[in-house]
Image (tube, rainbow, N blue to C red):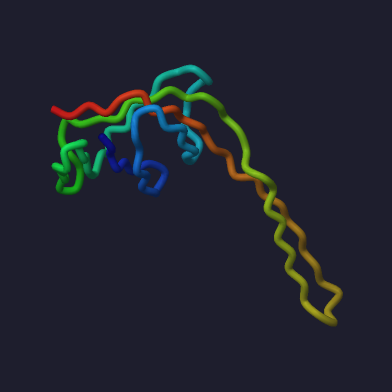
Length: 105
């Protein structure tokens, strides 16, 4: 069984037992999280249920395993012959979620 969920402005295909890195979620490590924006659910026998846009009553349950930051991305802006430089770094926060179950009505 698999599902497609929307969170953080992105869509993810998930299966039970899978570890998933998503945009940062509120919550402590070890707390449970429910994704209610389920777009599609596929069963092992090949049947697929789609929502319009979401499946009403469906949810994907998971547990937050880690909170962290991605590697640093450094951006440099240089204007030649103007003695103008700008350097900035950014580390995107993320949450690592372990998917425990997919529930459909």
